Structures are given as structure tokens and as C-alpha cells.
Length: 265
Image: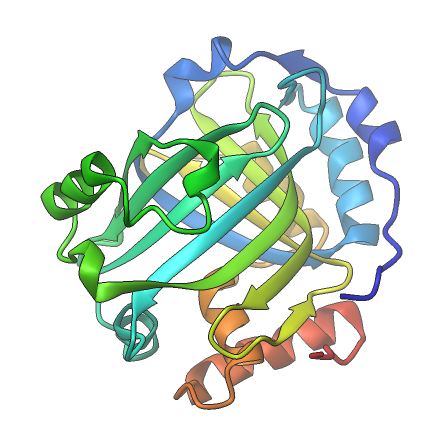
């Protein structure tokens, strides 16, 4: 994957007061409503300046305000989880392993969305070396069987996503915002890779539809909600055989936002 240039974010992030992982325990929001937004890095700079003025705090983990993440998504041979999302099935799931690169912690994660739009996430720790494939771990396989509709033997490592994440918390500790930049994808099925260049995906996570200063700030900068799944966008870009017509509109939306054509290698 060719290197892309990115706008340094250290300056505006330095203006935000820090919050530790221990302090964030009360805003984990494992059962929540998510609202996603799409923008670019230049707009993100302006948003960060405004959230600093509004008193938002930034997570500092292992001494860093920007944390690298590495995730592997799993799916059936026929891409059932991808297809459920594409076909607008309200009740759907995603299964992934995720590594927090700075700390070396890794988890098997199961995300379930119900027909009321709420997302529930369950996770269990796994050894870091199982990030690419957890299926030989008997305990992880039992966990998957207990909390998902899938069994380990049905699933294959399908796609890797790598990105940098900023996590913000509002002053009242009632909402959490994740900001993902530098998104790159590698498809294990096809061998194809791509990146979203300077696209930024912001996700606001709340227990309900409460008033949010972040929503106002994003609106002020003309950043609107966008229903975007990193996994589904990545499969659309890197697997020509996947039935993905509905998600191609999302790809064009990203390209319009960053004013660049996304290339695949």
C-alpha cells in the first residue's frame, strides 16, 4: 500500500484536557445508539479546535492521544454478514478480532444490531498472536457460539483494517466520540489493498438520542450523518465478486468528500 500524506493532528489535540482509560469506564457504552459522520482531515482540524473550547477531553492511552488499531473481520465463505448488511437486514452481526497496538491487548468482538437500531458489543480477551485467526482457541470458539449466531468452523478471516483512532468524551461523561483516520484495508480473499486517503469517520456513541454539543459542532462545519460501515466499504472496494451495488453509492460519497478517486492495488 503506497504511503499517503496526512495532516498532523498533534497541535489541536494538545489543547484538549486528557482522560484516562480508568476514568472512561463509566462511558464504555456497550449497549448504545451509534451515529456516524464522514469528513476529511482539513475539516477535522477545525472540529477539534471547537471541541476543545466546548470542554471535551481526549483519551490518553499508553502516553498517546492517537492510537493505532488493527482489526480482522471474519465472515462466511458466502459473505453472509456482508450480505445481511447490504440487504438491509435490521438484525445483523459482525465478528472481528481487534488489537490495540500500543498496549498489545487483543480481543474477539461480536457486534449485534437489533431492529430498533441499538448496537450491543460483547468481547473477550485473546492472545495477540490470534489476531489473524482465533479459530484454534477453544475458549474463544465457545464464546463465539454463546454470543453469536455463528460457529468458528463457518467463518474465515476475510479482511484486515488498520487505522488511527482518537477518542473524545464530553464533559458530562455521557457520550463517547471515536475519530478514525488513515484507514487502510487488505482483503484476504482477493489479495487487494486500498486506503481511504484523508477521509475521516467520526462515530458518536450514546445511550439514547440525547442532546449533544458534538452534534452541533459537526453541523456548524457542515458535517452530516452518514451510514458507513468500514467493513462493508472495504469489501466493496476490494472484492469485485461481492454483490455491493448499494454500497457503491457510499464509495462515491467518500470520493466526493476527499475530492479523490480511491485506488485499489
